[in-house]
Picture 1 (cartoon, helix red, strand yellow):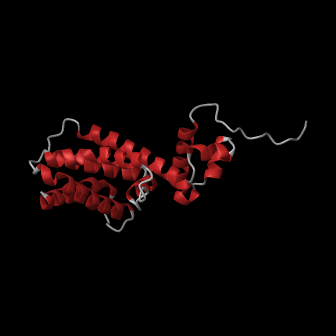
Picture 2 (tube, helix red, strand yellow):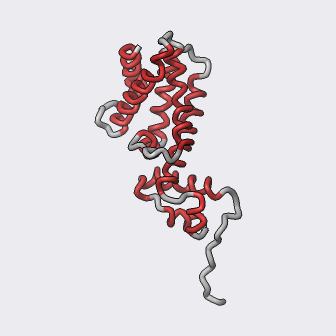
Picture 3 (cartoon, rainbow, N blue to C red):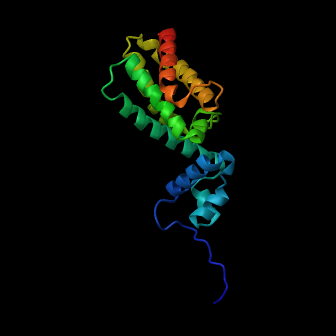
Length: 199
């Protein structure tokens, strides 16, 4: 037995390295928070040299952008499914809102990354912004279906989503005290108030 330490691979031969790193980072994020994510540690998890990781994610921010993008893709899929067959307007908006709330409860740390400090502040990740825009279209379609004038749909959607994210964050942080059994009804009532105020 030589006792030599196996050399780490420079390439990832068993699957897609970027997606494997995102999956590993998501697991760390939900288990231990954003501070637990380290490119070098993720490289060790994947069994590759850290240089291989930097080829795909030159820094931690680029990895966080990809994780946030993944989150918005997942929410978009859920929201479209939850609103399928719903009447345009309030019914569809509440369904999409409850879908965002369910996503936030299921993946709170991912949700806080998605809804927190803007990852793409310097415009480095246009795909992330495009993914967010696509995911939030479900709300714009909901407002458009309510008969709102087309020229104000985008602005009102942005206000509604910002308010909704704030309410969801306060529930997750237990600053708004509501039992789990009543949380959907509670949020739906708030949504109705927001929709009425914005429409």
